Image 1 (cartoon, rainbow, N blue to C red):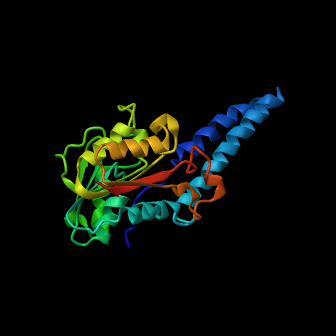
Image 2 (cartoon, rainbow, N blue to C red):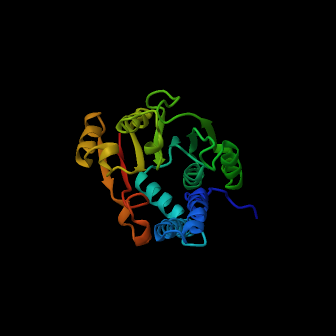
Image 3 (cartoon, rainbow, N blue to C red):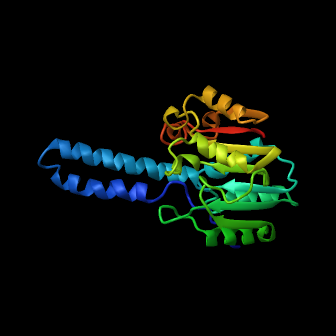
Length: 249
């Protein structure tokens, strides 16, 4: 049976990069213990990302689909109409939404590109394998300028995308753009590093700002405390600062 290909969040470059860097330092370690220390640190970094990649994989506990499921559980959408996934990657949320809501049509947008192991072709193949190809569509677009009219969608989701959009300095504007395309009364659920002040400012201020945009209901869920996330993955640069902003427009 053909398997869905959603890729692993931990790229192999995070494993092989430090490993390769360690080699010359190991060779120089006989000159000074400093080189040995640097080599050991590189090997430790590589080992950490081996562990992280394993835990994200289906064999290691499947943390990725658990995080996706937590996000979709907060959406609270009835499945009537159309939904948008902003930064769909290889399409896991698009497929999952279409499978959860049998009458829904779901669109996924992404900029894709060489930096990621994602593509439109893989999205379409996953939708075919998942049995939802007739109710899904994938388009190349940026989260900073969504190619849809105001209030076009009944629901919108996004997972770990906004902080990666480099052409917008104030990441709150990406949240605003995402909400623009949701109709009044529609649902939304966005997961990102919302508690990192350098990206979004103070959390309470962010929530108040969103309300000031005319949003009816907005709440925050700290997903970094989820019991399925191992302590070693709760470091700030991994999953220690994640959370979901969700509600009704």
